[in-house]
Amino acid sequence: MIEQLTSSFSTEGYWELFWLVRNSVITAAVLGLMGGVVGIFVMLRRSGLVVHGIAEISFAGAALALLAGLDVVAGSAVGAVAAALLIGALSLRDRDTSAVTAVLMPFGLGLGILFLHLYQGRSANRFGLLTGQIVGVDDVQTRTLVTTAVLISCLMILLWRPLLFSSVDPQLASARGVRVNALSLVFMVLLGLAVAMSVQVVGALLVLSLLVVPSAAALKVTSRPLTVVLLSCAFAVTAAVGGIMLALTGTVPISPYITTLSFLIYVVCLLAGRRTRAKRLRSGASGASRAPASRR
Image 1 (cartoon, helix red, strand yellow):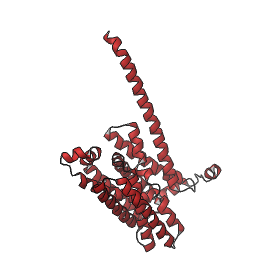
Image 2 (cartoon, rainbow, N blue to C red):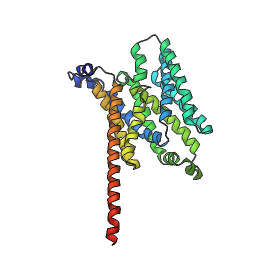
Image 3 (cartoon, rainbow, N blue to C red):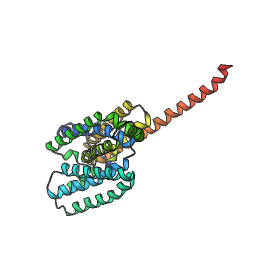
Image 4 (cartoon, rainbow, N blue to C red):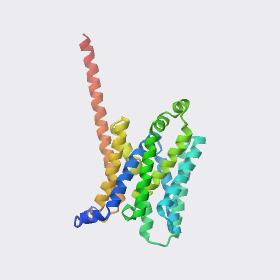
């Protein structure tokens, strides 16, 4: 297996090929920035499973659009937003987001598989919905992805303070007059759109690598809000753009490169965070041991 992977690598004509997919690289960078911003709130709200559930319904919407001959990005967005609103509305009543998501996930995946089974077109289109197809998007889809990602990022920045407050301590935020339920529904809509856009990069099955893993990695090394956001965006962009640039050297699909880079970044941050905490504990212990002697 390793020999097959290494033999598929080739740098011949690399920059000519890179020039052909430059729009895809730009799109991946913008989506990475969006994923880094949205992912912070996904982690704060412990909504990783929700992201996966929305991705399954987004996959069903994209598969239905593919079957009907409609725009796949639009179908993905409609399915994702519908799932996000449904999960958000139901979870407001019983506060059990995980249960609601777990019910919808297999339903969405089953519908998507049914629609793909009925689709008689190219098999590459089917595979792309599950594992991503950003190199294959046309100019119209690229503009749609970039515009939507920028819009989501701007709205997240505008709602940053109240959304952060309601994510960290919803009860206190509600007592201070913050409309927590309304903000939650707005966030779910933005999350649904973000998932739909990210599905075009890594597919429905691997969307967590762009919307969850970079933010989780950033939170392992720092707790400062601004630093977390900057690191999360940097990690997401590195994984998305780096995955495309590595994929151009071989025949392996893009998504394995993106997920592997994302995982490696998380492991490095995990080890770095543990090392930093260990140093702080040792310095705190040594300082405590010297304190009685200094008082004497």
